[in-house]
Length: 140
Figure 1 (cartoon, helix red, strand yellow):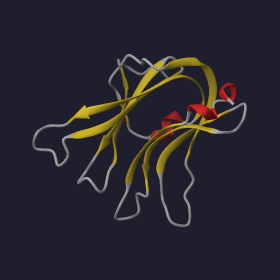
Figure 2 (cartoon, helix red, strand yellow):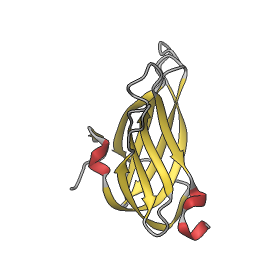
Figure 3 (cartoon, helix red, strand yellow):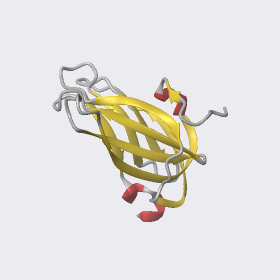
């Protein structure tokens, strides 16, 4: 599905399935002066040649969540050799309900990237933006 730039993705489930991952960058985003926190975390990643940007809503500094994810024009500096990944929603545990997508290397089954919000059913949900490059099969 062709998606125009800066289109907000309404559900992470839209990214479920096989993809080619070729880059991941983190950034710090300055928030408006009236925001509870002065900065938020952002993560940019390239799937199938498109850059996706996920931005944190830092809420009150103790609780946070993913504010939005969208196709962007961000230039990724940390690029690498293509790796096939499969995206799936993070399973719930006995204690947490999650709205997080995980990208697993199809060659070794290890987690490389996850983005979203964990612990959404609790008083302290938290934004997730993890990149684990050592889990890419050719980095083992």
